[in-house]
Amino acid sequence: MTPLYLARGASKVLRRITTETSVELKILSEKWQLLLAGIVFQYIHGLAARGVHYLHRPGPILQDVGFMILPELGKERGYISETLFTFIFISFALWTFHPFILQTKRFYTVLIWRRVLAFLCASQFLRIVTFYSTQLPGPNYHCREGSPLARLPPPKNAAEVFLINFPRGVIYGCGDLIFSSHMIFTLVFIITYQKYGSVRFIKGLAWCVAVAQSLLIVASRKHYSVDVVVAWYTVNLVVFFLDKSLPELPDRSAGSASVLPMSVKDKDSKLKEENTRLLNLNSVEAADRRPWTQMNGKHLENGNHLDTETTIA
Image (tube, rainbow, N blue to C red; front, side, top):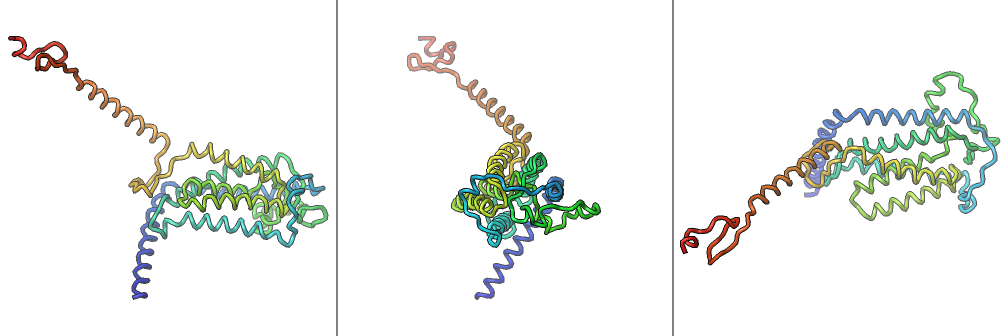
């Protein structure tokens, strides 16, 4: 019985994955532009972070309240914040692909990632403008005076710049401080789950994880406290205003038959049509409500026409 039960379960999951893949590919064929732009901008963001490293000049670590309050984790324990961030990233990515596996679905994976990438790109654009405006001496260990990685020699060729020396150039970057890229991803993921997730406990736990991530980043001396604080209110504001201009995602849990999201313009026109229909219906009902009065046991309509028997009497 057990092998047969497992075979049936695997068949259902495979059929579910196949059906969902066909639907997602249909949406992707129509909504690929923003996805591609978002992926390309991730490279541009990495390129900008690599470029500011050439401008970085190590110096004395700035006075920081977070550094005074939080004990320094040390170079050997710097992996803790990275491990937590990896857990956040993988958990969110797996959750966005749950419509392929689970029977209960609330959104389409392609559409949720279009939204996430829009939030990320807008926040990262502001980040690029900010860290190129003022270069602060990096507090991280490889960015301090005396470290061979604190300064980058001038590039020998264009390939050295455009290839970003991945992944070493991303891990050991300096100068891209205000504001924290780790907090951009963390907050965008958590805000998205706050809106489209279904488990209340996980929503509360996610915000606690975001606070822990903030403290670990400062304790690891990877960022100044200002980098984390600015990320908290900037990302929330970006998502708040950008969310209003993006098309609303269809709620699949409500059994919506619509595959593509409804734009703001379509929502407004539909709302106007419904209001017009209601007004017309109310006017018709008002016209049909004619006052009736009673006289000597007979009805008088609009006060003008009496029943024949009343007139004769």
